[in-house]
Figure (cartoon, rainbow, N blue to C red):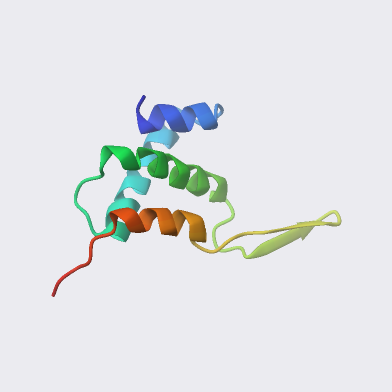
Length: 96
């Protein structure tokens, strides 16, 4: 199953074009974070997890928290510590 299909399984209401764009952006972010040119097959679950986070943040970019009708919600900055730890497995150091 492709990463786009997995994302659509997690988020049934997502449009095909939106899912494909989010996966493409997430794959680029993975490559930049890990300093790699190709994404290993075993990292596909991380790509989907990062894509779900990216989708859930759409429309709330730049917000730290918001409140309405007596309820409030807070947003994390960046990626969770657990996700960053798991990404570390694939990270390559840049040499000058």
